[in-house]
Image (cartoon, rainbow, N blue to C red):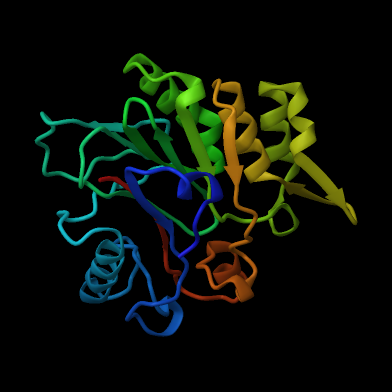
Length: 252
């Protein structure tokens, strides 16, 4: 479990960025695969999620997960939230204690957010599509609407794919430039190939939203020695599927 320097100094939360170690799954899902959407056995995924939950809380209910769709949609869970259906969204916000919320990634950026004054937390799944569509600003704007102040919010960018392993096409580059000409700074050319710095792009969007207390954990999910699941690495190895890493946070 990877910890944050900024969040570790704050009382009132439990959290963690988990890699692939410490679970029960086998083969390409070895071993802490937390993705119900993978082709791993559902029993193994449930056992893995339970392992994670016990590391965060002994008293909480099940981890609240989403049906992630690379969107700009989020779910707010308060005392009135009743839905039993897994929401189609890419971020969760809550002010409820002992409710672990989490996002799943396999190269995309997980972001954990905490407002130490209003006691509101968020977990964001930010792939390039969701980030481009505005998932980050939507979450921060909602927190501000609920009374949060930017200076009270801490955002931590978890392990994700590094720029050196995120090759993209020219059409991808043009899409970003059409939206914002300054986006060229998030791209790098190496030996006539184009690469995208997703984590730096995400960090800039958090900063633009008004949040200044930002930590970026520079761990590359693609690099096998870091023991994270990676969709791009799995594809390069011709694997039929891949596991999912979990990033989780809870008010206590």
